[in-house]
Image: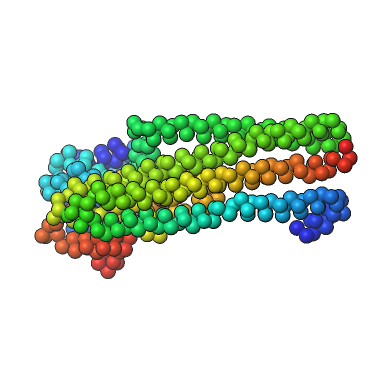
Length: 123
Length: 350
């Protein structure tokens, strides 16, 4: 990157400045927007682990569950844990979507940004 | 499937052929040890390939063998294995067809080696692929969510329609971007300020319009995936618990809920073992959140085609078996119950 910047600096200085601002700005903004994702991902791991634990528990105690006819209760418990995992994943998807709005915009911006820098002073 | 059924039927049992030159797809004895307990009750049959004229080689021992050893289906499985001893009931073979699909040769059975000299030189373990079987399983896994008559199914169809429409939209947007980029840079190269201004504004407008299409396509696709996975997981759990209920109190419930703790995998029926992977492969896959290009069609296809091919020998397992006094091979059952099917004691041979 440094060597390329050196080359670009020799060609057109404002472009280098714009590209640095672009990359640093993009990093900062997406890190800021993506903040909630950290917590949500962590929560997701925990919720999935809860659900898996529930599954293991039911399997290991399958005999007792059958003996005491606790299938409905176990099903309700598992459903609740699955529901929590699914809800959290839903939130995660919404958060991802919001970050995506920015990142996609930023990604497409780079296709005309250099041309704009190049074109404006001369037009 | 039908072809396999026919080949596995009793009509072919007598057709003991020694066509060493005919290519066959079959499990080796190593697979049988790895994936299925081989006892003297174990069914021995090689896999014929439907429609290719490849005949399964069945030892003469097979003629005296029980044919109705249970498939994994709950409704018929537990009864059948006691009922038939002589293997002459054609209905039973219908029931037991799946067992014939991936089975290995008997442990320490010299007659089997005589019957099929090429046996040990065939495909390596887990490489057997029966496309009919795979496709059948794929349908069993993929269809119920869409065909059931419920609100969630209707929602899913609308979502799918939306995703398809948005995907078409993204294709259109990509084409527009392509042309815009060309014109834009042409305008710069040809030094046309008016054209440049116009195209720059158009570019910004098109981006504003197209970004939501791209983003919402990804979002609704993920939502659809999530709904599908949640539905499948819930139905497996319910299905499993229904089966637990179906067994009398004094019986150990059959172990159909298999759990791989590291990946959190679960299955309730052998027929669904693949669906388990379709669902849970993604549920706990870390790359799911970080790699948006790894989308559900890819995952579903991968898990449908690759994973089951490796797991196909499962049908050898005999979870359904009822206790039998003469069945010495059953001592492994407790081991199974405690450690699950992935933990094998190689010394005991199951």
